[in-house]
Length: 616
Image: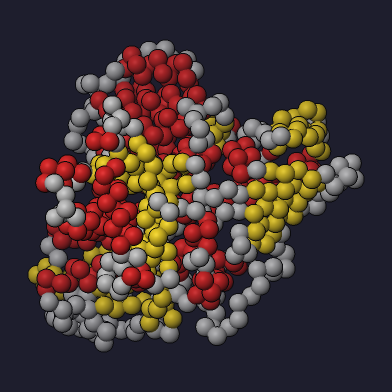
């Protein structure tokens, strides 16, 4: 593209797989921004799924430069909104993969800038993941750029990407290749069966679709073991083997392995303890890495797809789900009665969407199960009487429910949307603003007025914090830092340097120029001296604290891990500094980086808190 954009000139090159023009000259001014964001999400997603490319906003399809009127505030808003849009992609998009430039437009003579007109250049690199998804009103969508246009990624290509990874985009009529390609050490089918083989070890697992219970079987092939077979439960796979993935054996970070002799190791596999040779342990670690990483991706993928991050998981009898809200027991009784009256077979109105299912509200569209609402008794109020009894409404998730959506060889995640499985935020909003008002309206004439008003109470059950995309100050991070600190205080273990170092580094940079007026240096000295064992006992300035933390970062870069107790203390130090610092002056770029790193670590700790350490 030209170094200088001139109004009404024609750009020299044409659209292709790596470039796209979009003009807004024929669109009403008030609609330009809305169309801009809708358009950019789709094309950025397509470029990530392809070989990368550049989107030129303000260039018409015929190459004519018309621009978009943007003042300084508009440019800031566009930068933020586009970045926020990209944060909704799954898997998360590394910030280094895209760049947004605003280029001024010059007069036809190229002598001066033409008012506030600009071209927006969005440069997108080839994505690092096999496939990326974006979210719109229709649910999760994925796009590719093919033959000069952007289209929804065909199921055949999605399946091929999920099975075999990134390849050159095939012909739409090309057959899907088998997942058992030459040189692969494992196979992965739509039934979530995973078999990992190494010369001395084979690990065979049946993994859940989302949050269900997996299990596995470990087979040792050596002559000494005489083909010993060990059963592994869901708890043993997730609770015992998940730590130290992809770390070298020499670091001894994996808590289930201890060295007995030079070439002999003791391995604790839940109910079974065995001694293995060095080569067997190496093979075992590779098998466990493959299985546990896939297991983790399944669970975290389900969290991302159903948008469960701000809701608390719960298990009651055989029901696993997330707490949406709390309502009076009388209201739940009316909701249940309403759902029975409006069963699908009883009519075809917009409310005939229910199917009778014991004491659960089951919502369907056509033949698709969309939502299960399950009641759990709540004793939040005392004394427990009929007038003060409440129930928690649970968004129920189970693998059998999700398996109905695995149609035509597609993953259930592709069915998420209004006509398929409902995400948790959508289910909560629909229940609160559509279902409950409709139920109360239907029973309005039969209910005493005082009871009508009394039962119309809903207590939302959601983490009280800003979404990461809304964080504007370091103090907004505090609830997440508290979660991370609690997670770091879990039973003694070694934390991989690759996980903790970015967290330390970005928070040190964020706080290195913080004022010291309200900082309790005595508290900080105690935490750093006791937990980190730095020789200096007392700190006289925050800068001395920053220097010590920087030195500690260099140390764990060398040794490759951090003790959980030390990580807990350092996290408390960061919290103390941020909580006491009320200054409104901070580096926005450093805050953005801190938000990105904290979000990644928070998702990691959420996974462990709820799925690896569910009883702590």
